[in-house]
Image (cartoon, rainbow, N blue to C red; front, side, top):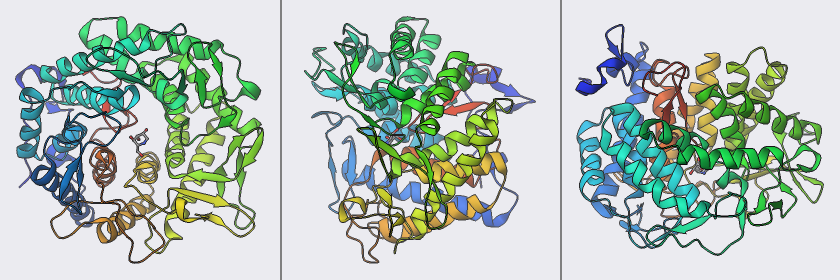
Length: 488
Ligand code: DMJ
């Protein structure tokens, strides 16, 4: 029997035609029993991943599912701050795993305590601030709003720089930044959705002001050939390298330009997104393979095109299609819908060309390689979501069921090769091209926040966290869209 989602008393204004718009319980169930069974299978994957974490790594940041112990990881300093718990909150809620959800809420309410740690501003924002804001929007439980405010406030000293571009790391107790004057585009450019919404729900404008400063800085800075290099000197306000990528180091900056436009009807964000995408096209970075004309988005270094694509870049298939979907009269809409579809196909090819049918961390295009890793360093898989994320957006927008099939194939392969044992959690793989892959013994928090949530949603009906009312932060935490969602 499906759980009836408890809608809190103070969320009654979120009823639409008498139904909660937060989660819809059985209404998210597909009429097709095969699809319903797939959704149940994904839910069981979440249960195994969660239970194993609770059993062996509670309060720590990540589970080591092979060793059956926890680990801090390095992105949250020395702190054991339950990153998996916070990143999982909304997934548990959306999947109606209410007992587990209440356990997670109890940790947030009673145990979570930031130690004397130097944390990544970006990671803390997308996983903690974003996770809490999403949980707040879904449940209207103010504990999450207050936690988001508390943690975002601890990040504010990082923004005390001449440009307003934040340091990459800050100590959450002392406010001391890590003394590194170069920051990464995808990090300081991936704060906008959370900070604007946080200002809105707390009435404190400071967060909006911080990201508005970053936006205006990036709007006026000279972009070589219309491209954004990935590193910036936060004191001198100049780019410090010539590496351009829609994947690692650049990725979610572009994602947030588009998604801010969706969240807030932000015309400036849309304009900057369109210009940034034009930069990739105008500099010849959107290419096709010589063998089978697979479309891919190359990187650029020192003015030279590099025919490599990271798994991270595969989110862009969904981004291009989403950008076309929300603004069909945009002059780039037809181009972007086509590019998004074809790039998603290429990312799928990177999956089906390995022995495990799971795509590698990096794939290349050369005389002999087409969407395949070129060396052992490129062959790993760390439970990343981006390819499945694009399947999910493609399915929701086009209705083409092949994306559900591709997602199911990926889920089956993850179950077969990444599972640490019966009833156990999931691990990354060292080599996706081996049928006996060695596991890397890390269950990344984004596996529960993103990979499993996207899988669950692709096997649900479109009204569960609908694209018209919610926009995902880059960690797949849904935030309400201002113009269509009364929860904003
Ligand atoms: C996640 O933390 C986010 O999706 C981020 O934007 C990129 N990397 C991981 C998942 O691969």
